[in-house]
Image (tube, rainbow over all chains, first blue to last red; front, side):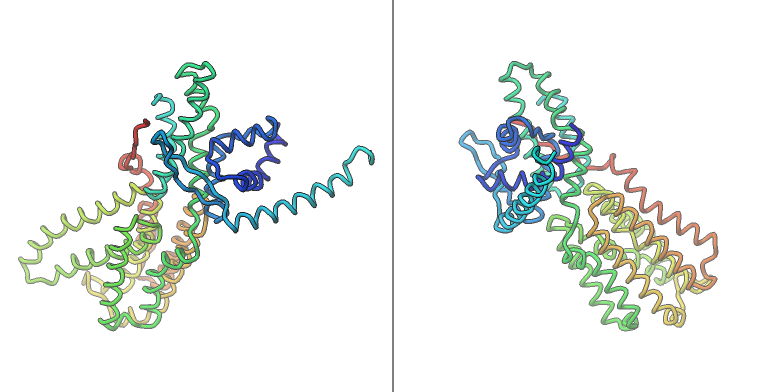
Amino acid sequence: MAPRRELMKINIDSLLLCLISQQPMYGYQIIRELESKSQGYFKLKEGTLYPALHRLERAGLILGKWRLLPNGRYRRYYHITDKGYQALLAKRNQWQDFFTAMNLIIQPASI
Amino acid sequence: MVTALSHYLDSIRDNLRLDPSTEREVISELETHIEDRLQELKDNGLSEEEAASTCVGLLGSAKLVARQIYEAHSQGSWRQALLASAPHLLFGLLFALNWWQGIGWLLVMLALVLATAIYGWWHGKPTWLFPWLGYSLLPVVGAGLLLLYLPKGWSWLAILVYIPLALWFIFSVIVQTIKRDWLQSSLMLFPVPIIIGWFLAVALEGKFPEFSAQRLQDLAPWIGLSFLILAASVAMFIRLRQRWLKVAILVVTGLLTLAMVAYYAGGRLSWPVFLVLILVMFGLFLTPALVERKVRHRWQRPLA
């Protein structure tokens, strides 16, 4: 479990940017999406989500906006910014290069 | 709301130490998250208490969450760093360029400090305000010293009226600052031991509060340098994220600057006086931390 958590910690920014780039999302929705899209692999400690979101927002990669719901409650939806898109593209390329290089070495045929 | 969750949010609020509007946003966001999670857990058949305890477990340590959110917000921009260090920088230039001899410059400086402090105080008390606020308290102390020059009889009457009023004003500003964050209060009071040190270094022996203009002239470059060091420390303070590093930068540069004052004071600051100044510095740094829990405002919004 520990290595998975470490990997998650390293890649949390990429995961959050990727999810938010698909549609504006609020915190609780992000946790549910992360869990369902990864088929239960990514289980984020809920308290660690908000520091990560606030850090990305301070860096100008996402933007939080309060939205009034029909039931009168407010929710904070996060939107990706242009700077966030650029960062996501860079992170995606970086990840693909890493994944390709890892596969060249670790793939079953070479063992 | 279930008590465990109220305590959880209170604990987050107590440890956030952000400006009030950001703090409100963070707490509201966490509240809506908790409401969503509670509803889901209750829909899955858990009782109110079980759902609350599971929810707290899923969120993790309140202190850790608050600290991480604080660190996400605590780093100021370079512009804020410059703005926060500006009063030290201006005081540094006042002495380094010998502007302190011109009453015009002193009045301009006084007006600028007061105007900036009042502006920041009424615009959400941002972090850059507190060094300005510290300097804006100097005229209050200065006016008290000037009362000593009133005719005999009148001076004591004025002092008896003025001192309690001045102390009340200074303490209420400090308490208001501690409510925001004790570390901002330490930032505000940061130059006090240095100013006292230089004041003692230029004071005429046995003629308090008179000072030697010649001695002030001789020491002006070093006084200027000490304020420039304070300016650099404050800029670093604003740019750092971690709280313990912010404390460390104030303590280390405070001690070094005080040692510099003692060195250039050339015997005017004896060892006992130097040690008392170090104690004053630690007292000013740490007392706000000790009284914070008693005075910190608890902002609460009941859950729907």
